[in-house]
Length: 416
Image (tube, rainbow, N blue to C red; front, side, top):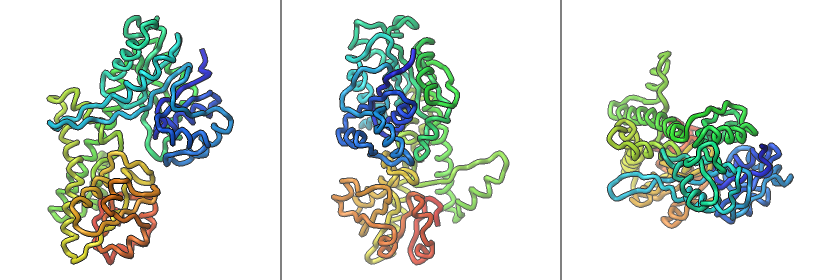
């Protein structure tokens, strides 16, 4: 059975590229998002996020009529759910997954379901989330059968297939990366693989839904632990007056050592969030994963202390913070340690604050209200006496480093 129409629910950093790639294969794609501005932008053949070459693909598939965006769910052969899964901050300090967006998507999809449809949860989720989605669909549509009750014979097929792409390379990796497909039954997995093989050149590897959910969490937790080692090492080196960048290069000359570079913390919606889903599922067992999260969450405050010490050297400190995004050459500010650092510096009012972020058109509202300046790199370098390198954007790498030599520089990225 072919897929004539596919609905992608959630048109953010994963959903929109996925919708565009599927549509580029000649399949009719209906993109759904609650953001009217995003819908209008896409229907005009434009994009509301920054991702290399995505604008070209979207413009093409909108022009051919293969991609159309709307704020309401319509009938389709398959539904791909790519909505946010943030975590909730509790008073006790626990980090629990917020599944309300998945639940809202399930309730929006349910009235449009027909026998033979496939629903795939792509959102990175805690273990058991796909089963919860299946139960929400079941509760809304008692006239249909679901795999948690009747297995392969179910009217509706349900699977989890987490995205595993790198911002800045999403279009390439959506096609080239292997995909882990976890169905609620063997028939569910087989149907999901049919869908992904329409645009994925990598291998589609079958498992169950819970293992697929845990695989994505494990991948990001592994990276988080490795970053925590580098961040802790940078703090130790600072105390011992050792250049951590030189140290890492030397240690990495060992054939079996590959230490990552430290930074101001960990950002993005994946690495900074996903390990907490494991900790929440097994709080007594996830000791190393929890500690890595705590180390990385504490790193921004270490940077802030460094900035305060530097500012105290000047009667009128002017602090230029280079970068707000969570990684280089993108506009994504989600869970960004750079943004967190600038926000905290603004709260502490230790001097005049300038933000430089070439990938966005303006400051987030909370920073604008704090009278944080928003300037070009050249203007910021001209005026500031303290430079804080928070993101290694291409524009910063290409800058004349002699301009930095006349300033007090706090370099969290090894740029200078």
